[in-house]
Length: 108
Image (cartoon, rainbow, N blue to C red):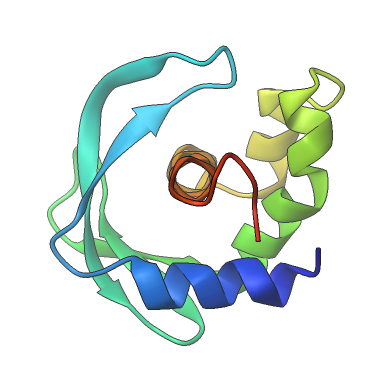
C-alpha cells in the first residue's frame, strides 16, 4: 500500500490527548506511554519521554520507517538501522504498531 494511505489513516484516527503505548518488534509493550499533542498535516507532535516541550515527528520520518516496516517486523531490518535514519524511532514504531492494531493487523 502507498504511504499516503497510512498517513491519512493516522490523521483521521489519531487525536490530541490520546496515549500511545511504547512497543517493540518482539511484540512486547515497553513500560510507558506517550501522549499525542497535535496531529497536523506534515507532522505529529508528541510529548516525548523526559522532555518538557512537545516534539514534532515529521511525516517524512514516518515514511522512512513505513518503507522498511515489513522488513523490520520480519527481523530483516534492525531497530538500530531505523534509529540511524530518524531520532524519532521509538514514537514512529509505536504509532505504526497502533495503526496495525486498529486496522485489523495491517497498515492501510
